[in-house]
Amino acid sequence: VQRSMRAFQALRVLLEDSPPELGHVSLNSVIEQTVKSFDEELRVTESRISLELNDAPIRLNADPRMLLIAVQACVGTLVSLVEASGQGGAIHIATRMTEGTAHCELRQDAYRMSADQFARLSDLEWSDRPGGTPAGIALAAAARISQAHGGLLDARRTEAGGCALSLA
Image (cartoon, rainbow, N blue to C red):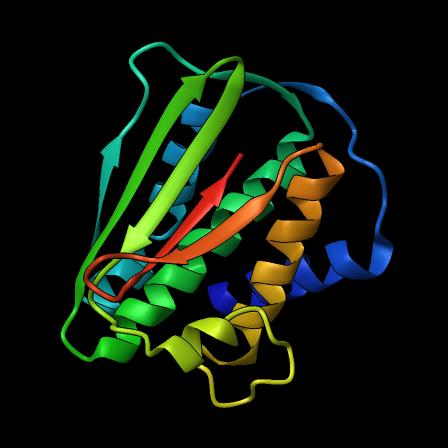
């Protein structure tokens, strides 16, 4: 049910394509709220999340609802990949400020992605992706939200063949 609701929210962001309603928001709080909302899924998928949050709270001028959707989309995608590994695993989330820009990196190494799979990560036509079609919709929404705030969503393979997502 939670996954379906998040997929619906992501699809809504893509369809509405409305500008962000800016306000003051703490990135650390958004991440902590997201992790808490995944408690049940983490338990069922035998996943765990470790946090490495910036010591000083990172305050942003952003749309709190959209930022929450983007972070949930990234975490949900990684939980789906860990679940696809069939063995559980860890997701690591780190935040930092660099030259006035907030960065949030999320990564997992439980599910090893081939170069072909990784190249198709954001392909909405990829129907047999780990995590299914909702993962593609979620990543597209996270990218759109990041762009609407003047940032970007970057995806890269980790040294271990996993997946890292970076919001800046």
